[in-house]
Image 1 (tube, rainbow, N blue to C red):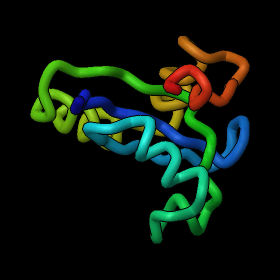
Image 2: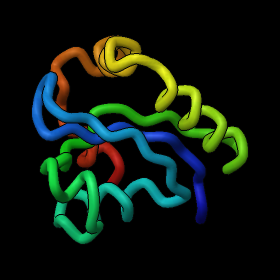
Image 3: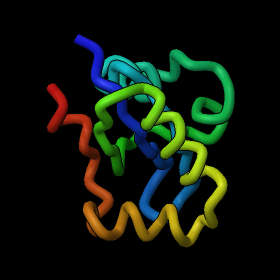
Length: 95
């Protein structure tokens, strides 16, 4: 079953962060954790799922991702701090 969502993965607490969108968060998070996706997240070791938001449609998820990416780092950190102040890895909550 596909479930559109926006997510943020991090290298460590207050480290490098990456915002993405997917229709299969458990699979995508696994790919980041295992370094299966070439590019930014692999280069900067972004493996910890620290925030996500579920959407009804992929269109709304993509729009939200664009808004988040256009915002400042401080706003992204605020999203994480508001729901996950300890920066726990949320991957375990998905499976």
